[in-house]
Amino acid sequence: MTRDTTITDAEALALKQVKSLNVDEQSMFAVSNVFRVANKVRNFAERTILSEHKLTFSGFTVLWVLWINGKMESQALANESGVSKSTLTGIVKTLEKQSIVVREPDTKDRRRVFVSATPKGKKTMSQIFPEFNLLEAAVTKDLTAQEKNSLARMLRIVLHSLDQHGE
Image 1: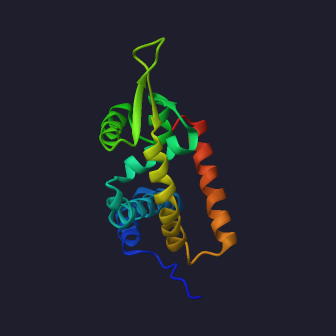
Image 2: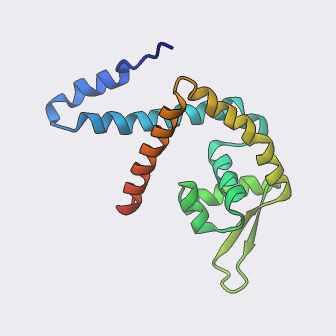
């Protein structure tokens, strides 16, 4: 298997731009490539899988988090989904219109709201996720099993480092 590991055009342009700034180029490449890969996967998923289900990637992420964790308080759901609370409000309203999530006010504190996936939402995730996993397999097909494990492990290190520094 021949795999292309050459520097990308975007990396070459970035390197040229920052060369005189005395920056950590390896860190720049690592983080910028994580960002670029995440955006490409997100866009590809929205075009090929999620649009069929009338979901954005953010909507899919919120539904995934609820599918995995069950009912959650909205602030915790926003944090786990990687969006602001105000952004979550819009996502949840959209998902509510599709009858795949429901909001419930806290009986003790009306300012707090809980969100959960409906049976339709859970069924939707059960249908979508195998398709999404095929996409995950397709975008990592040129990596060996060991490389996939190493990549996941290294990204966990970065995630834990961010958690320690309060993002």
